[in-house]
Length: 246
Image 1 (cartoon, one colour):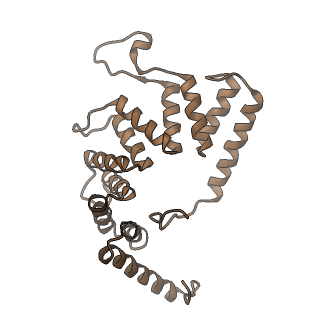
Image 2 (image 1 turned 90 degrees about the horizontal axis):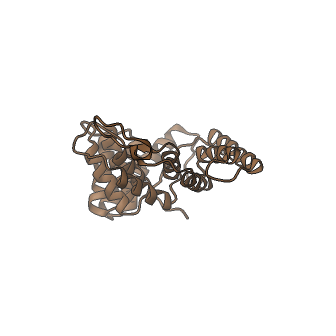
Image 3 (image 1 turned 180 degrees about the vertical axis):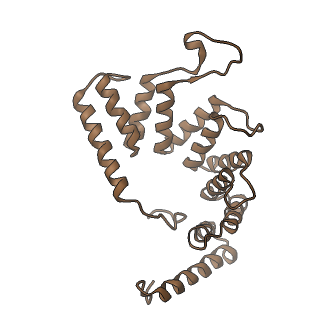
């Protein structure tokens, strides 16, 4: 980045142009999947060319098995972004590819598609599989997956029995379980999910799934407020997410 004055509009344009050239070379000539993903991010964030970005993400997933690209293309298919129309089944398939490659967010989205009803008849609702995928995502340290699991155990998931009113626990495919809800809320809070921390505070306050403890209720309330403040003050664009953390 030496030699660029980022207060100069012309220098910024030149920098972005050269960045695109660098990513294209790294992807198409050097066949580097990390750089291919960065090229997709560049096309999406800088050029706003969602069709080309979708093509890059899809190819990088199919050809190089790059999990973040599987997640991105799955998200594009889900939203109908950069493609003709949304396709839940195709989105599910790409989330599945990403999940099998160890991408926590792919497991999360695949799990939610398995559990939630949608208009695509090609997808059969499978709550047990969806819960298993959410557990995998949570164990891969996805805070949102832990939060969703906790919420599902708080409310339970009812069976869909046509014309039948089943009594009590028989009406639930996933019964309410406040102890499990607490465990997943704790895991989600430790991973930084603000809603998990807020729920944890309420559980300690009421004694739901855990012994009442007013001190810990206040502790997790304070943690939730602190995370919320950080979220509010740190709303920044994350670019070059394809690069590994160092």
